[in-house]
Image (cartoon, rainbow, N blue to C red; front, side, top):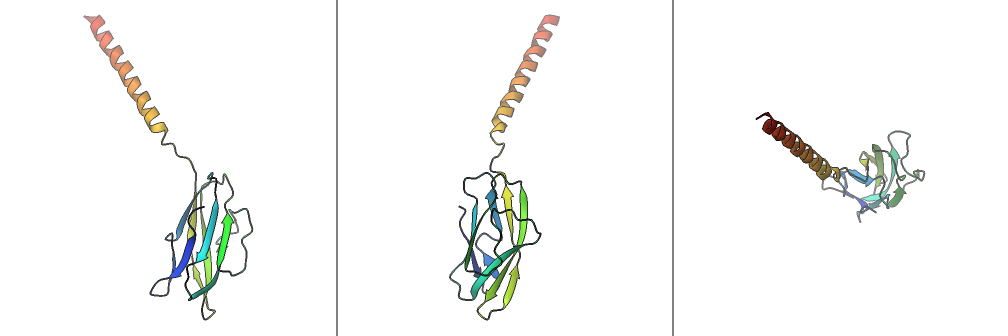
Length: 141
């Protein structure tokens, strides 16, 4: 599981997320859980999340209740998406605030393994063309 997203307040009283507000999840990873948690901050009493659009990339329904922690699991094999959502959080005076981070769901594989293969193929083709060119040049003499 990626590290829990810790919610805290900066010195100006604005919500800060430990991941900077963008969580990355690999869609075909073996562990797709995303966890939010209040980081020992007495000024934040509870929170809940809500998608900006009706679409939900998680297996579970997103609870519509305030709590001090939350864990959801992204559907495996999910297509690439930046899921934008709100965090509604309550302060020690029970006043509700809003913050809008996102979860970037990325493919879990990359095509980096193809780079050396393609490089080798291109080099091989260049060697063959050069050999053919040199052989034709010799045959003309």
